[in-house]
Amino acid sequence: MDKKIILRRMRKSKFFMVGCTVVVLLVVMAIAAPYIVRFDPEANALAEKFIPPEGLTKGLDGHIFGTDQMGRDIFTRLLTGAGSSFIIAACVVVIASVIGTVLGLVSGYFGGAVDTIIMRTTEVFMSIPQIVLAIAIVAMIGSSMPNLILVLVLTSWTSYAKLTRNNVLVIKGQEFVSAAKVLGASKLRIIFRQVFPNVTTPLLIQISQQFGMTIMVEATLSFLNLGIQPPAPSWGNMIAGSRQYLTTAPWTVFAPGVALMITVLAFNFLGDGLRDVLDPKRT
Amino acid sequence: MFWKFVLRRIGQTVIVLICVSIIAFLLIHIAPGDPARIVLGDSATDEMVEAYREKLGLDQPLYVQYFKYIGGIFKGDLGTSTSYQQPVAKIIFSRFPNTILLTLATVLISLVISIPLGIIAGVHQGKAIDFFAMLFAILGQSMSTVWLGVLNIYIFAVKLKLLPTIGTGGLEYLILPAITLGYPISAQVTRLGRSGMIDVLREDYITATLAKGIPSSKVYTKYAFKNALIPIITIVGMQLGVFLGGAVVVETIFSWSGIGQLTNQAVGNRDYAMVQSLLLVIAAAMAIINLLVDIINAKIDPRITLQ
Image (cartoon, rainbow over all chains, first blue to last red):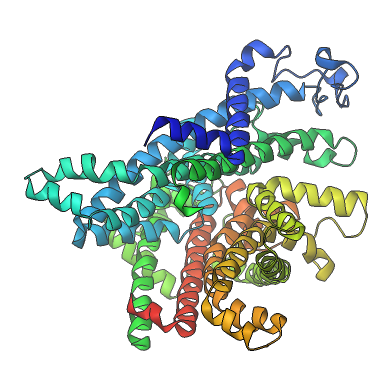
């Protein structure tokens, strides 16, 4: 597609502009976190516990979002937690989308027994609620970062496989694929040079939405004490840790909750926006 | 044709359940350490562990162990819970009704809100009510159950003091968990209902019925909505899995003693026999619900049986 057209559509799509801006901002802040923050994310400072947000009164000098039950600066913990959440989500989305897409391509292109086996496998995985399967596996193998990534990949590759397979079924009946076959192109070449480029658009949209979803599931696991382990901060375990102080110090829970909501919202906007930009027929 | 479809779907469900039972069986084996020691917990004596090894046949090949495990399930033996010192099956089935109650309340509340909202938004596309409905939907799809649950407690229980915060009890205890669990689904159903209505309203037969002078309210609810219903049933059916997953969080936040809370407690207590069985029971419940949803859809739209 023409780059100019894409750029014009990007500027026109409000979803894309808002989503993209917020996502870029969040990622930059998460990466720059170690240079921005002025407090230790994990060290207790009990003398300073439950300081309400000072962002409006003291500006950037005080505890912008206040402090929690251990006297730790919430803004610092939010940014530090964002870093680990984003790294996990990025690893999960990349690995799961590669595995899912390859299986989807193979399943859709070859059909027959291969297709049946792969599709039945996705059905088995989809018949267990994602959170329940993730909890069960983490409970067995423990909750280190690699284990967390492994579990999230195991519970999310199916969506890419199904999506890609369904699109391949449409593409492979088209004439340019038959033409490539007649010209004697190898199966691998047809799959990766002819079919794959035509399934990337829905895949990109899916990846963007899955990124938000993965962050949400990771937060849920951390909330249930099965994800990132305290004192290391994660939005999920921040909500869990401060939940009992909701009445007296609501900001301790609201800050990670709102951060989580904005992040997921931004990735969903980005997904909707990508649809506007790359696939205008469907909107 | 219909019965052939039903039989084929039942066959598929059985295969899925067999595979899930294999996953549940292997779960105990992927944990590092001796499976018998893991299942019995640290308090068990060496003799107990040895006796349990005998019973499970841990010295025999994996497939023999699997068939023993399956044989036990068919006799209703899901093992013994280490944290309750009681049969796992008994505890799971004593908690199940609470989760079913929560799920029913969730489906009810979310549909009561989202179906009218979706219809109204679709009929009044582009107006203020449509914008409001879309805002409701977008927010709902981005809210984590964790955050939504805490927010609901803050608004309705702490600030407005309208509802009890946590516990298992009468209807008033059910409202907040059901809203928390149901909002993401409401969001999706609102979206689907809206786009379904927009599509259906473009059809010629709707124009024809309107032209005949049939009141528009009747056209929208009786003719148009019926055709927008199938994707909604499918989504609600598919989302029941998400319900059961979300129930772990919601039941934990609101101390609702169903199988979701039980799952979380079992993991915390390292009660592996319980975790294993819950995985199996929840997946079985989901597979059966999906089967029913497909059969209902096939009844409504016979074309589905041809696929």
